[in-house]
Image (cartoon, rainbow, N blue to C red; front, side, top):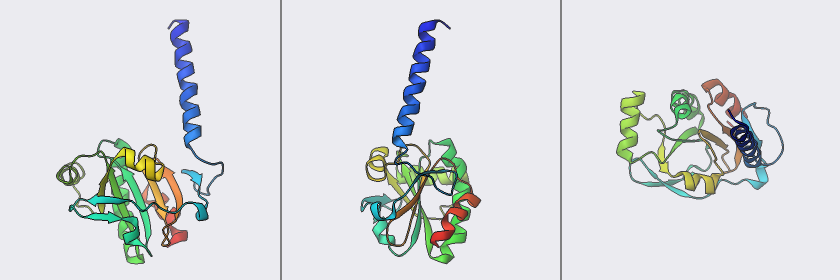
Length: 181
């Protein structure tokens, strides 16, 4: 590799690291190793934005007030998201009897028929929790969700308490949710 290509690659790598650090949010850490930022409960109310459900109705997080919500922002085209979905189905089985729910927000994943077919054909699963449809642009604007999967814990008061970027397992999610249930 000649010196010019090497210099360009190193420069590009440094820029990408800088962008990732800038997008990570305010300083701080969470007790959870995959948390991308510590949330200030008083400053992070969940946005009141409406999405279309797979059934063609409109829904918002406000419709679930008084419930703990595990909002999973995912895409049918995202390999870690696909790997994570069976874990979310298992989490739903545990938290639903406790008055909480997973909501899957599929971004840029086609029509409701496309998403249903994905669950049936690719996952061989029936949706175990509410599924909504959105766009990358919307989730970036309203949830500052850069990258997928992106998972938020929203308490019963509608406050975003934790945010996780990347693949989460059943056990990791249940551990993170426990303080809010």
